Image 1 (cartoon, rainbow, N blue to C red):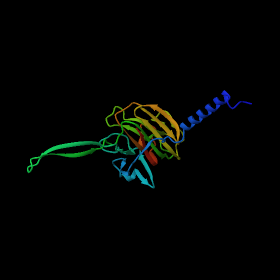
Image 2: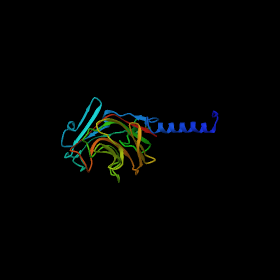
Image 3: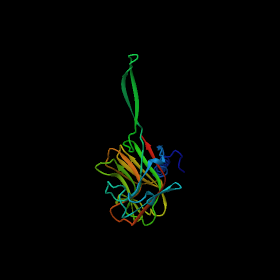
Image 4: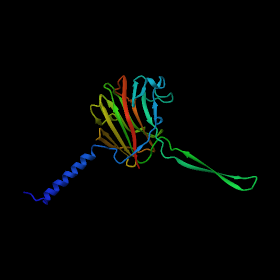
Length: 254
């Protein structure tokens, strides 16, 4: 009978604890230890084909945002030649920059110089440029949708590359762009999607239903923003593309 202090027993217990910790880190809650970003309804900015009413390509009902677009739809405005889309661009106001403007003024009555201060708060925009940011949402892609991006992390306008991550759906498979498989059998079910972007490390990591599914290094840019919905891609498109989203949240860690 082995002693309770046997080196082999200690080794086996240690290995068990290590494997348990690894299993927990590979699944569960990828949002542990991060801070939730407060998003108002106005932070969900819809982009849809300019030639039809928004209500014909987007619906928000009972907490679910439904996006659909047709293969022959127009872009979201007349200034772009991009493919048709029905998407939300998440508008994130980061902390404001405070600018003090001082103006001297001499009183005619007392001859005393006064300094008046105006405090101007300028929000840095809708993008993020540092820290760790995470998208979380519950998505649904109906059978038949193909050749569409359903979620993306976009670089700032004018960047050398448009995006650091796009998740496309082709014939029921969720892919990193049109390449690596992220999740099979995506049709006709609700799935929990978490996408983590570590700006400093220039990495993105994808979780589906709490399980690590994909990770890679990405080319850094100056700033980024998040979009989700449907955005037609360049091959294997269905005539109509649709996705639904609920409980969309952003998290951050600095």
